[in-house]
Image (cartoon, rainbow, N blue to C red; front, side, top):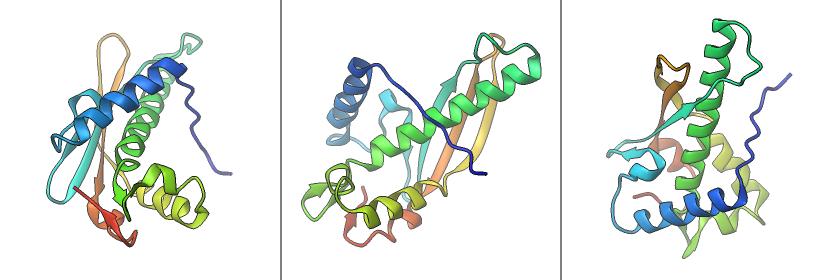
Amino acid sequence: MTKGFHIELPAGLAVAVILFGQAWLGSTKNIPALGIETTKTHISATAVGLPPEYAKTGTQKKSLARDAAIAEAQLRLLLYVQEFDKGGKPLSELIKTDKKLELKTKGALSRAEIIKTEWKQDGTAVVTLRLAKKYLKKIRGLKIP
């Protein structure tokens, strides 16, 4: 059985995150608003996850908060990578019609590693994912900043 994450953002928040992220993409490699940092070889995303109110034990709260933070960090990586240029168009436009490209992109993003997890006193989890750019380079024609 495959596990997956489903995130629903309010429409206004999703648009704000995308637009704010796009404004940063043109000017710098690091995007503090999305928790993105880049190096020559890696892209890192940091996100915070909250435990759900229905969690009863401390272990449940930690685990579910960590899962939420991982899902959020994956979303941030996806938002960042979707704006890379491929053949003069952003990747986000191309993957809507090209299923093979969508699979390659998802495959590359699935290689992100959890490099750091912290739990705060209020029950939140802070997770940092790191993706090696070499996996994105396998997508032919993709311009990686």
